[in-house]
Length: 466
Image (tube, rainbow, N blue to C red):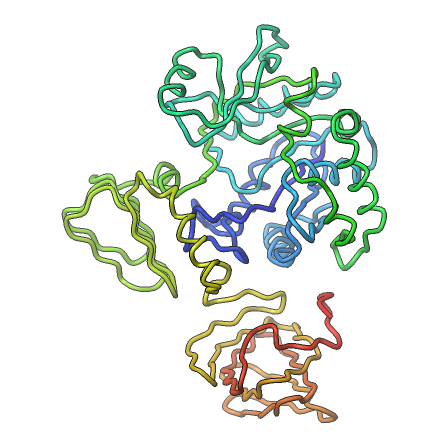
């Protein structure tokens, strides 16, 4: 069985912690590991698993690869989507990439919490047994409350061991309808997790959406291998219809079955959901970071840097990051998307980037900026190298704080060490390499008429960005 890790989400409902270029699956929200890492690690002990296959946004490729490397996981492949097309094309690509159509795929979103690992493993074993009978299996979460934020699956009357045939997939209901679903016992929350043979899924997709399958085949056939990544052809894949597995296949097929799963599951789709899964103090507060509370109840308070102190508040979510603070009633956190939409309309970078931006070579932190200047703190990992590049609108001044930098500046190659600096004039082709065994830390001062990240011409890059 091949785990297929779907890591294409943007996680906007957890802004300001989760952002377009650093979404929730790459954050350590519920443990020291990231959500992605937890998704893979909780499979430990499942018999017969092969290395995972991951599908992710092209912009997130280095974060995904590095986080898997940190937990000693080498994926069978990492398929990069140049544009998001929802889950059905992503799973189709994974099925096409499988070595055999008889391989059972275990499809898992990268951003869920599952508390009862033993119950989850038992459900996986049952799903594998059913998938080997050419059934398309989905995992239905046993509902514990009338939740209006999830879609539902209605079970039919035909039993397959502990599973049932699927009678219907249902959109998110209103509260009264959700109460009816909970009372009936015939409805499960839709988890978005699946198991089926690669060939069976492809056969059903060809029945119901042949255009989608044809585009996925063509895009994968034209794909290029780059390091550990499979890069799809952007022009071809952009023409692919966008749809979820539910709409594209599961709602239409007569092979769908649902396995009830009672394993302390949560999709952490909002700040209130994150409050649900966190440990709480005697007043019902879940806190992380430097937080002090007085006369505060049933609140979620997250501090990334500064001391956050609360007095006399109830049922609030308060999240502080380097460059933003978000405060909302706990029962209105679903509306944080409205703020993200406003940020996008105003073309503000806070919708997409943190102040600290991760790159394959390390990261940088924008510590100050003005109309014609910008200051960054740059950290380059041992052995890493920035691309050979130039800028049309800015000059740069680098000061080494820690470590050693090997700089190519035009025709010169210069080694600079701690407390030394170098100036890169506007238009000069240059590169930076950390030849040492410790991280290189620098201060970069940029000056010029335009300081945007898109003022860069890459001539050579070991990470495939040229």
